[in-house]
Image 1 (tube, rainbow, N blue to C red):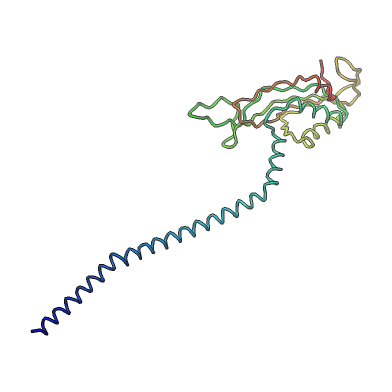
Image 2 (cartoon, helix red, strand yellow):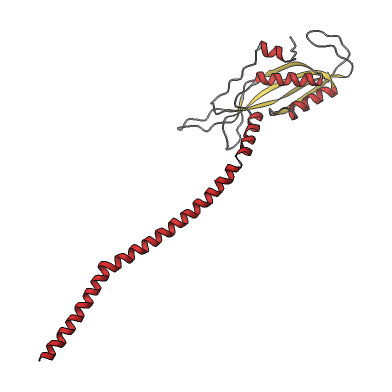
Length: 236
């Protein structure tokens, strides 16, 4: 009889041990393993993110090394297409270039700025009427119509135009050019004396302004001091 009780007690103890082990698993071991799995997943994600940051940092480092080059490019662009009309300054360039080539400037005329690339409308505002648009990109690009008349030898007037486009950093696009041969004549009406074969050259085109403003006001430069500083002659 005692042997039966002993066997029953042993079986019960074994079952109780299994229950205790199972409870220990669910209450202690299983949560710890779950935490370890989550930690491993987090570590992998962190390592992946660190790898991405290393790639980004390497790219930023290369861009930073190119900073002087980019600044030089920006300075060149700002000379080609400034942020304001600077027409008085351009008049001085025209006068200096003409004097260097021995030609006389008869007139320099500008017209109202034309919006080439409009700024995108804000807060649902209707876009402004423009003469021309040029797709997506940087807004606020304006073209200023320009007419320049010069008088001199055919060779010198041709070189003057070449200098104005090639030697001058300000971008000038020419869309019209007329050349009229001259006869021998004395100076009159503000025009210098001419010899047979001289040429009167009229250039029409545009200079450009890149401005974020909604409009660019273009004023004809009237600066007596500036006019005296440059050998620009104007027909009265």
